[in-house]
Image 1 (cartoon, rainbow, N blue to C red):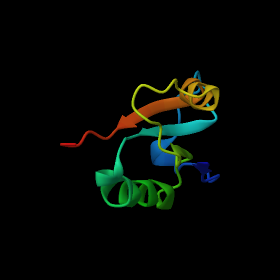
Image 2: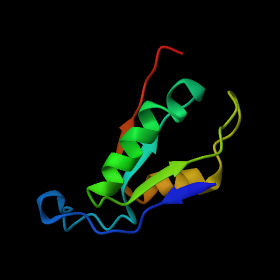
Image 3: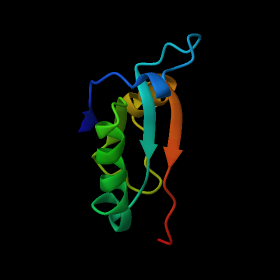
Image 4: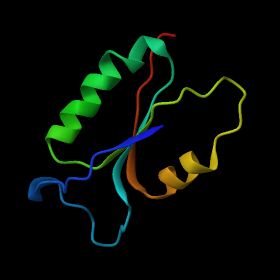
Length: 87
């Protein structure tokens, strides 16, 4: 299940007028080692700042085809934040 916060970003983080994305940020991560710790804290901090965030709360198994919902969210995001971890 995807999570979306529907607040507008502050003027200091306003979007490029040429980009008409539905989301400000696509938050990309994998694994339990970041899901409920760093990534969750990052998500909530960005939401507090007023960004519209897409994050997929359903874990995709390694080798599984990316769902069309995720591809659409990627296309409709102004930028991506990718969280890498040791695992």
